[in-house]
Image (tube, rainbow over all chains, first blue to last red; front, top):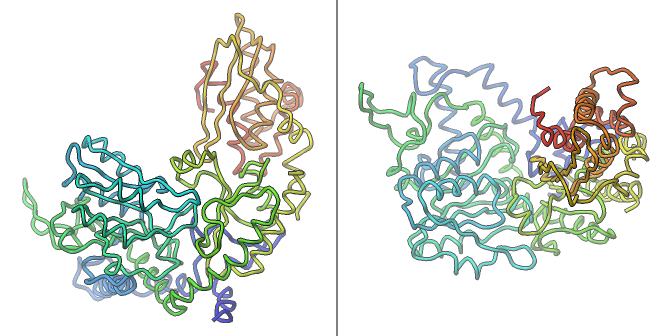
Length: 409
Length: 148
């Protein structure tokens, strides 16, 4: 298994280059993943052979494009174990998916005084749509807090979710703290209060096996680009009954049934939510990315990343003046590792590491309320994926040590 | 480690200013105050100026930021103290042009004092905002909001 993963680096040509005269060590996977040749080639194949607009024409290319788009939908359905393929809506990405839920289900169902419950560790994409909805509707936005080691406080979750709660929306895996939340348990709590459960799976689906029926979520959002697929394609899963009752998100071509001068009716799900020309090459690329990940096996992906974290986390914690945020033990930490060096701003850390060819993120990670909650301005963040290896981890550690030496911190 | 690369950005003068920033304090009698944030990283600068007529007779800044933003603010306060608003805004424009790679005469750059050394930032596009935040704060606090 490990051997198989050692081999896959050759599928990612972008990794084979020098940055600032040093071999590239790409550790910004929580921002976006790199793409294997298989996905890149698939997009080229689609454009060279089958490109046409979907669900519009009767000609052969149009049929092929439509077929491939719908096959991608089925691929996604199987990958996250949705009951039916019509529960899979293609979007631009997780942000778009979450905005869709807030501006359709949220707009239709939230009234003044209702509660929406999120957590302080949310990415802005699972925060601002709910914040603005709550402001528009005079509803109450509530936050679940964290435990001392940066995990979601489930006791607080039970307190915050009440009979007034209509929507609970929580991140499945954090893009800052490296924790994975118990969405299944949260869904149980939400449902016990007749609230719906929304999960932001942008950092989860690329790294672990996700079964939306087992989690019993009502909506689940994720992006293709963090899981080897191109940018600009994402998914919203929704339970069919909920989707059927919801208003459309956008209006335009191919989402209608009949259009008259002053009235229109909408077509069936999922197409009701897919107005205008769709990102077919993105969906085809996502389908191939799923094949690639399935070929490795999501359990193997998860185990391999665990192995990397078990290797690198203790080494990071050994560095004098380095603080890791979130759980300190590898068993509870994903491959997303946020840290700070005492006496040096994370932007300086990121620039220094870049000089060593090591690409990491620095900033607030689109989670300003979380930064405030942790009393931080910003952090550095290294995030691992399947093509990273122990050598990358060693390079990271070495680059951090070089940085400390240069800045004398 | 590409120490040369790091050395070209983090010159000794820059590290000195960031370790021992000049005028990093709040003023008791400020006439102009402004807070600016760098939305990409969350850095904040609070700039306070005491104007006597048209002259900056005192200046101070507080806030949090990286080595570049702190040293840039320190060097800027050195450069504009005891200058008129017109002179200061001219320096802000020279700085802005310099960082964007536009040519300036040596005599123009000399006006910036230590701050001229930040021209090295050009090679690090991701860090340009860190260096310019304080100058933007200066321009805004003196009522100069035009884009370049």
